[in-house]
Length: 97
Image 1: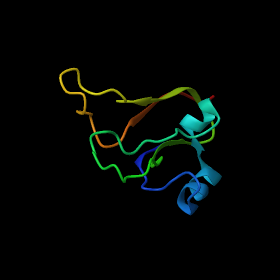
Image 2 (image 1 turned 135 degrees about the vertical axis):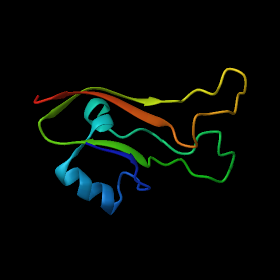
Image 3 (image 1 turned 60 degrees about the vertical axis):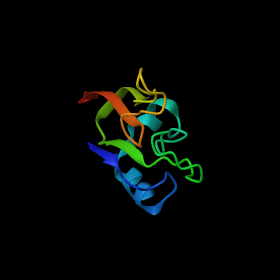
């Protein structure tokens, strides 16, 4: 399993190479990558494009039961306070599937 901010969008060479060996957990569940994982409103740059840069890649033989974006809502006391400048990803997997 490889997880994190790869600084690469879904059609980039790096992600295409990873997908030759691994499966994107989010794409396995939803049929496509998320609309964006970066930026969140925390970044506050109107010119920043929406990109998917974050992934959970899984090996063959691992089944993805669930995959979702996380940390997509601001803090209760501040409408622009987010956990990060990236939305998170979470997945539930089953080994040996």
